[in-house]
Image (cartoon, rainbow, N blue to C red; front, top):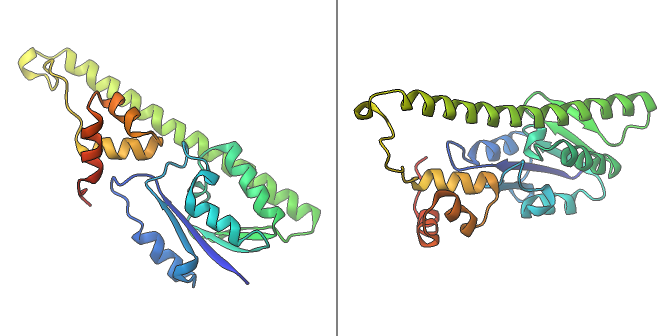
Length: 207
């Protein structure tokens, strides 16, 4: 039976593809059947807009086994993940999550088994998007609290004394990858030049 592994790395900040390649090897998946999209957001970039995911779908169009660390590697959006998983089920694919060995079998024929599978998929997809949005909101609130507290300090003790902080290469590169933005959009976001963004993208990043 055809076996494929899919992984996704959203940013370069503290993440590498090495662990997912190791995970694929542990499942006995050959390197040529291991596909990992790097620097790609699971929320802002749809699965079919990713080159490696398209290769996965081509290989599994007539069935097989797909290994993923967890379903959020496919998508963090409810509608996208739900529709992709339903398509995989229609192809007769068995999706195995290596994180906890949970599986979703597209070859199931028993109505109760299919209903249970689909209900679990819907719940996981909804929870995944909710968790992602909650983390983003908590990050935003944290930043606002720090700014508000800083504004109450004497000017000499403030972190931000009025001069706008210039984003560094790692921050700019990570934000662009996470949000799936163009170089021009990234330059506008951080109020830096397009040339600076291009230079940051070419610069070696710390791991």
